[in-house]
Amino acid sequence: MTPLQKSRYLAYEDPPKYISEAQAHSSKRLTDLKKKQKKDNPPLQFDVVTEKDKHDKLIGQLKAAEARNRLRIMRLRYTSNRAQEVNHLISCQPSALKAVRLQALLPPYSDLENRPDIMDKLDRQRVECLLEDSQGLTTHRT
Image 1: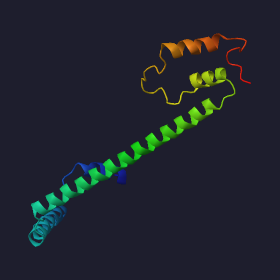
Image 2: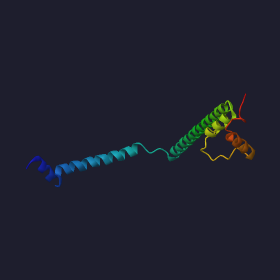
Image 3: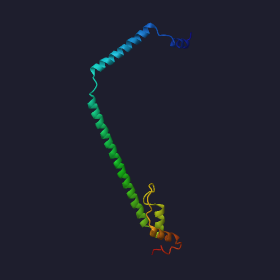
Image 4: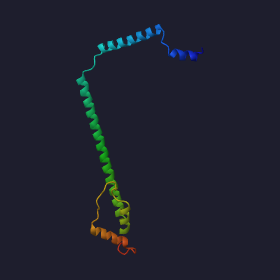
């Protein structure tokens, strides 16, 4: 028989007596070693471990809350700075028509949230009048 055929045949055979005795002896040694380690090293007190876990969990929650607060403050600061810059750009436009167009194309606050309409009826009429003025008579600045 070739070695390959022999290994396939022996894979389904029971191991010899000396091998099964060695396996039983080694498993008995391992179980005895586990029992000895349990006797020598008793488990820690449950209350101490629980209190430490609770304390670590609380510290983790506090750190996460601080990080969320820092992110929120950074977002608010960014949006307010951006809105100030956009408002400054709008106010520096040479004509009112260009300012209205820039404000329509580049709002100071992003439209991610549903913001209410900031113009009342009178403002809306003024803006429509400015947009309809094709000759620039009402928006001409000298």
